Image 1: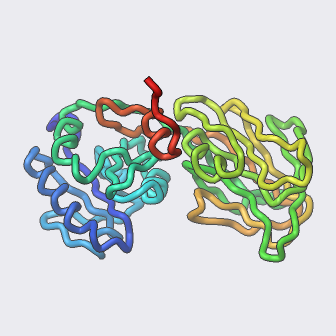
Image 2 (image 1 turned 180 degrees about the vertical axis):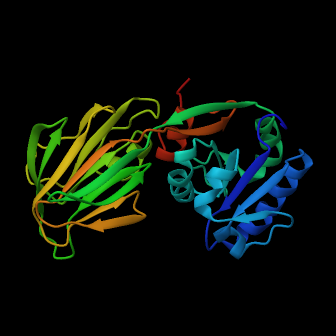
Length: 292
């Protein structure tokens, strides 16, 4: 353990008083394994007191830690993933009792599983992120990372939006719909799945474009190589927004362009030995078990 992860960051789900006790159990577990330093992000520290933990801003935890453990759900994993991705720091997700798509160590089992993972008994998995850039005329207005998806949605007036899609500078289609989801493999089991998109295994090097309630039935999801550059151009629509992982957004105007590319760094998630992606899908999606 001492050679693998000396400084470990802890991040807890916000506004969840009941995670204070498992957070303290986790911190005690790390001390038992001679963790040199426990870092606690400022938001978590504001809600839960962890003795002897160093409090750091959330956007600095990836710079200072060797490993970050997230106690919460997939939403918490999404938010911290974007912060640590620039530093290529691995993440471990600990769920609060409900198996997540990304948080696969249960609170009940962490005293058994986490020590083994700290000693190197884990399965690493690389996940891609995307970076989006909003351009108006010749000005870049906004950039953001997304781990799950970039979503374009209509405004509160309820009318459909119209847009054009280009891939690697080649025109693909124009569309009238409620919006569009550009998803990573990780995000393919989120909003994109609910909108009829394909499930992409996390290791598949692809992005998927999934229409949201398109006007024409011929509009279908399309998967492209993750080295592709996807460009969205809004041609008509009011109060249109582009959302990043459902946790931040930017207001678009007609003729704005949003360019989406794979981010330069991937995110490493550490799974316990025995992790099986398809077992997780069966559990979350209530697929049938084997007949024999």
